[in-house]
Image 1 (cartoon, rainbow, N blue to C red):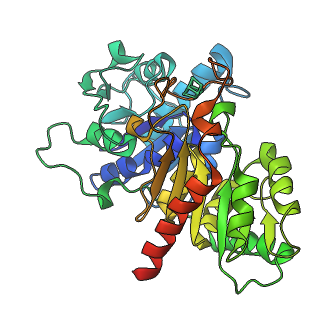
Image 2: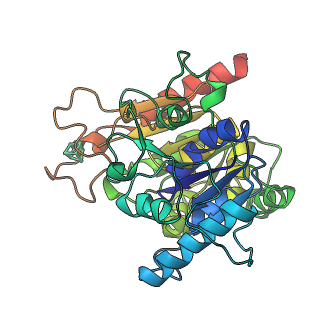
Length: 358
Ligand code: SF4
């Protein structure tokens, strides 16, 4: 019988759901209800039968959009396609189970209204009253592992690292486009490059010393900045202070899977606690992640081998928020301001020496 995974959260969470999807796909067909961005990042994933895109902010907003989405879930469950047009009868869904990787009240309502009889989610989730099975939210585990336990609540065995490693599937075209962005801006493409991801939705998670770090890195490597449209300016600032032809700004120029392909070509990634570190985990690229108001113990650290985390130790106010506030509540932002480029470069050097010795 087929399963439905619901994951409409942030990009990083969607990437970290891929081990759960893979696990369920070993038992039967899996469909995924996700956001428009999630639809892009999960495309080509061979473990997924159907991607059902739920655009609750735009075309699926309001009650009409909710009802339409319920209908698409039911069609996909019965016919194996979200676009099937044959009429349905009865109130049951074709899915044997729904896994609520995103725990909102709305997600729980969607699958309940679609008639999915078995609904599995975390015992801490907002929508838990609609679940038929509540799985312990293991706050001391990586989020990819927590999600894996949704499919294996009775397991006596811990998952292996391989089982909780995310996977993404950029196409050859994604790879070609990413390579072209590098070739257009970098003179000597035979020199290896390191990717920097200076952006984050949350302002306090944006480590401020990427330009300084880039200067240190550029002595031995090319530098490529990755990110979205909001990161173009910081990318330009980083590139403009480096010698001509040894840096590229790919921020805002690539789709999500092309960005993943680019990170996959890099020697290493330096990033904030944001989605690019999860792209790197999926692409097996060693990562140094800067943590400020958040900490890796929340379960969102890098998973690629030889990765490291940077964070200001001994700061009583840290962590101050699950996500990272837009402004430091204490005004001093010491968690990031006191994490120097020398600190992060030191960790990057350790990572690189470990990679080169393998
Ligand atoms: S309160 Fe502390 S941990 Fe939070 S943003 Fe400010 S300095 Fe960082």
